[in-house]
Image (cartoon, rainbow, N blue to C red; front, side, top):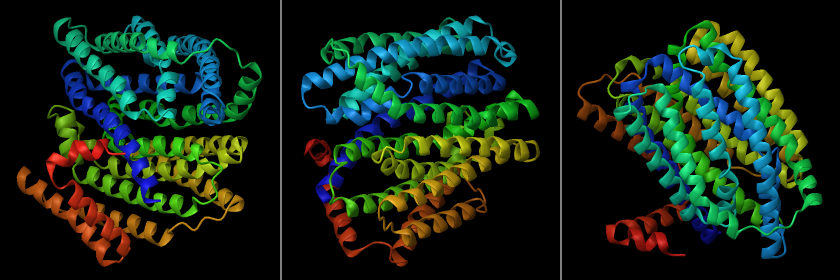
Length: 495
């Protein structure tokens, strides 16, 4: 089990590096944006980001989920290549249709014409199409467990985005429109660089029958994901309706800060764990491995989330180039972190349901969750604003996680270490609350106090006896293995 855990966390490490690079790029891009665009335009940028999320859900129409599910079950390399060809071809078609539909929707929403020209919608659409066309090759690299290669492509794309953004904003001085020109050039070059990978993994054989089965498997998830997204992003549009684009701007900054947890911990873990899970989907001796993995995942999420909350003010200060007007996002961050933790739980509980091909149930639950979220948004946001939007998201994610858990328990026996998980959550909430009552002195003193508070969290967990003797021994061995800087590269490369 230890070797499997090491392999999983090694893959998670590379995905985490890629996600960290993506997040670090925000430390460059957001301050750059804040110099050249207004707070209202930051809010509008957040709405464009939700439009791309919609596009990503539409493209593939469930076939990408089926591709992930069936790829490792193909008997030969030629079969896998023909499956990739079928999936990619279908994704190209649905991506074109999705981009056209989305562009028409944006053209008919007045909010997207309020502070920018209609030309931005065209640039956004072409840029998004380019990005969608290298999505399936990225999935292929994950399935082939080539995390380093996928991270390299991602890093190049991010570097190009930063460079072109600086060029269009600083030298061309075209403001808000320059953000999308930069994305268009970066995504276009990335797509061109991925073409050899696409050709290498294609075999011109059409799996029509299997494609139908993949769509049948994946389309309930696709429908639920689309509807859930439309419903869950309603908070930004309701905020704009009851407050302003500036309120959406502050809320989007809080989301970007909280999403450090999503991109570095949740997304990297779930990505590597999902492909590992499907590889060993028929193994019968993995129960303890999965249960312990869930415990560690919860610990990593809570610790990382606590760190983000503790240093939220410093992150916003750096992210928004010292503009204190965005500090009103601080109270929203803890609520968003809680929602992301519940979301991480939900994503883990979904995997056993996909194993039993209960995608229709997943679809129904997610649609109901989305309806619940939008209903709560209309009730809570008009009175509580940004904080209400974050709260309703957390409640909706918890609702879905509980529903999925009880369904999984009907299908198989799972003895999750709930006592430890509850300790993680409660102690994390206590330390988070304490952090808001610590007076600010100087930046150096503040950072030292927060580091001590974070260290104190681990001490408390140790005193509460949540760590088993074997886990403490492994931690000691890991420390001895990694404490020398010269061992870093050698240990990363070691199988």
